[in-house]
Image 1 (tube, helix red, strand yellow):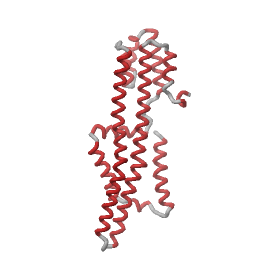
Image 2 (cartoon, rainbow, N blue to C red; image 1 turned 90 degrees about the vertical axis):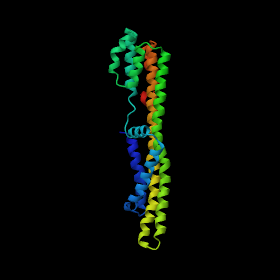
Image 3 (cartoon, rainbow, N blue to C red; image 1 turned 90 degrees about the horizontal axis):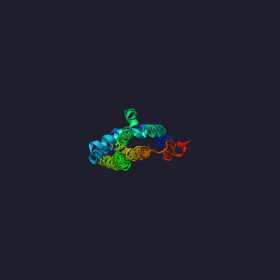
Image 4 (spheres, rainbow, N blue to C red; image 1 turned 30 degrees about the horizontal axis):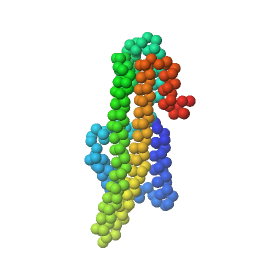
Length: 251
């Protein structure tokens, strides 16, 4: 669980709702079903029009990146590559063939298979870097789904406000209906702006950061596999891969 994401959502919504209560308001005043339907339904519809099904589904899956730590453990990757490098240096690359099935990460398993098959280091690097670039671009497209939602939501909220004001203008002769119309008008704007700036845009930013961490992990794996295939000293390989880590991770 990514505690900062949960903490941020709690603090963000708590500050907004708590501030409203401190000003003398009550939570029931912003519980408007009509406004929620307009803003969230309209935002969802706009997103569905803008993106194909596969990108939208991937965005829902990648939303877990903002809530959970799913980027992997770089230390385990470094340890694995160092161990494989020691085996390859002692017994040759073909000795690693039995280890391929034990590797859980599909990307690392693919790279190790290329090394064992005797692919040239340059070709191995090109194949793996193409894989990294394509996967990163595809995943970043899913993050843009939330960015788009953050752009649409405030505008849809304004549409909801205009609709509420139209309802008010149509019932000027009936004062009993003015309150609900004005409430929908203002609450729709609040829903749009709040959802964009407290949920959609921060989620997009967090997903991008997690995707970048995954890319760094893969770049580290590529460097390790190339060093392994060239027969470098396992200790030197490990020292090289540690350079990909943040200072806090190195400790």
